Length: 262
Ligand SMILES: [Zn+2]
Ligand SMILES: [Zn+2]
Image (cartoon, rainbow, N blue to C red; front, side, top):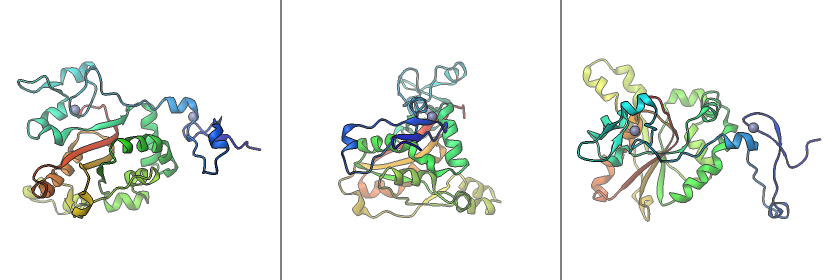
């Protein structure tokens, strides 16, 4: 018979002993256990913004090829990875900045494959505590998720980033409409193809929601080239800065930052 304080690790499927505090033992509240064994838990390494990192996205620049492709913005001490360097020449830092929660290591890659691509929604609980912690830090922002295309929603039956926030009890909204797919079918002329770079259209958000908030925070799973995030931030800027007289703060958090060169 399985003991009350024994669990099955979601990552490695091994049985493990779950530690119980006295407080948990004598409380009537539902006990929340870590869904991972100690070994697997340790493999999710919190992302540290230190060393030779891209000023905007935190990508490591110390690997030989990445370092060579890093760029310093003229007359500043700001080093960027190649992707962000290109963006930075066009956009202000506020639109490019992104914070990652975990290192993009093998454990993270396995997690995202099983959660997002295999559609195993139980894996969402692995991120719960880390997200709750992030929310404590940024509770004064309106958390937003990007919309999925109809086809990927149908395929997965759940919205991967929204579901993560639901599990962690983080209020969010999705004021975007996905227009990428619809455009793709119609993309014949050059003008249409250029419009493809704009996958989201802003629907709306009640101004009431902004009261007492510092700004918007977009949450996504993995940051790759930044294109998606920047497009979404541009939509917000275009729709909100006029109303707010440019005072809206914009942030983005992703679970990880893909280390591949874009
Ligand atoms: Zn394990
Ligand atoms: Zn970067």
